[in-house]
Length: 329
Ligand code: NAD
Image 1 (cartoon, helix red, strand yellow):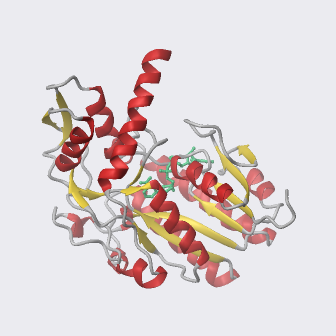
Image 2: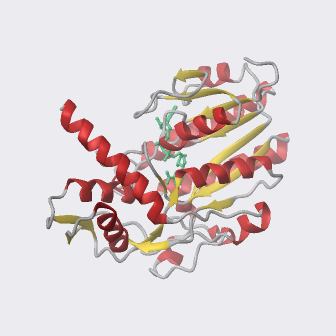
Image 3: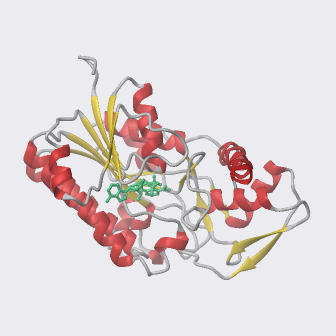
């Protein structure tokens, strides 16, 4: 390791956002250690050192903090698309696994004295269900998280962990920066198998459909969301880490679309005319949008790239994955 390099720890470095974050930190000249249950799925890790280990294991986490880090990024969580977190079948795992990871990291990080500054990835899922019933959602300003009423156990765990991080900041002086991510998407994200989210699922369905064919959409497709391209998410994370603002702050896009509009966007990118068949499926809330006044005020920056451009890059990557899968069987 070069003498002057800053040292970063990325927890969840085998995941979608974590693996992109490792690349970004490497580009910025950091020495990076990653840890995850798995290696990144679609490309070799860019980390200098990668531990394929379980953050629920206290011995491992204690060992992890026998080294010191200038910055730590906590992205590890039991995650999934709507087909995973909203069915209720995984609630106990989601809450237990993610809370254990966060408890271990803070406890052993604090005890070792080697954890100085940490980023924690919270989620738009912390916001109350009842303020997301209107597809024309005007945006979820950060203070609206209370009084708390998230629509999933995943959201409750995130809210608990936000408070856990802030309590360690208050009592032990650890610097904490928390963002609430809103639907991050892009290349090298899960695109098939049930854990993928709407942009990837729609790109895949459109790519696989024959011309003049049909794609299936869960519900009436009028539910609305905003989606943020991965590069902009990382820009927000890095800016937040370099600021003296702890958050929690939204990192999301304000370009809200319905799922039907998202599907039509993918069709336009693909140059295909398809029909949409609406089928029953897990839906989540009716309308969700980021609200970016606070990030603008505190960081002097907001995401600005168009959804169309991000979808085009994601579509291109997914078509390559489909072609590769077809060849390799
Ligand atoms: P992801 O599932 O791709 O990444 C999470 C990683 O954590 C996975 O690689 C997983 O293997 C790892 N992990 C889970 N349990 C672990 C354990 N016990 N020990 C070690 N590693 C473990 O998800 P992502 O999309 O990259 O999300 C990263 C973070 O951002 C998560 O905390 C997620 O809740 C949060 N977030 C993401 C989004 C989004 O749209 N992607 C939105 C809101 C919040």
